[in-house]
Length: 145
Image (cartoon, rainbow, N blue to C red; front, top):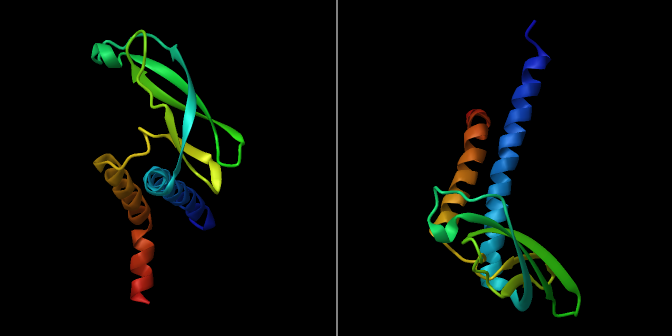
């Protein structure tokens, strides 16, 4: 009784893994594009430590911190963003500037997060690999036609 039911789970997992790959690529590219083309604004920062100490990290990275930032864009509208950092028991280092897209200020990041790094290239490569690996047999079938 192998019929149409076998294709539905396979399609679900293929679509899910493809979506994860696309998400990795887009989220990584957004920080790169913010670094290259983003407008800069001064930010008001509020931090709050949560969770317990993780002794597996050095003293300056032992605690999780929630970081809330707010900034005013070029049109005078206030926007808020959130991120998470690792820091010491009493404080965490956070940039006081925000990079954002002037056409979409809800897409923003702290300036020290909107950088180009080798880890981003690895993230893009993993996203591309996920997309290709779950769809490679489809590509082979199209090539044979």
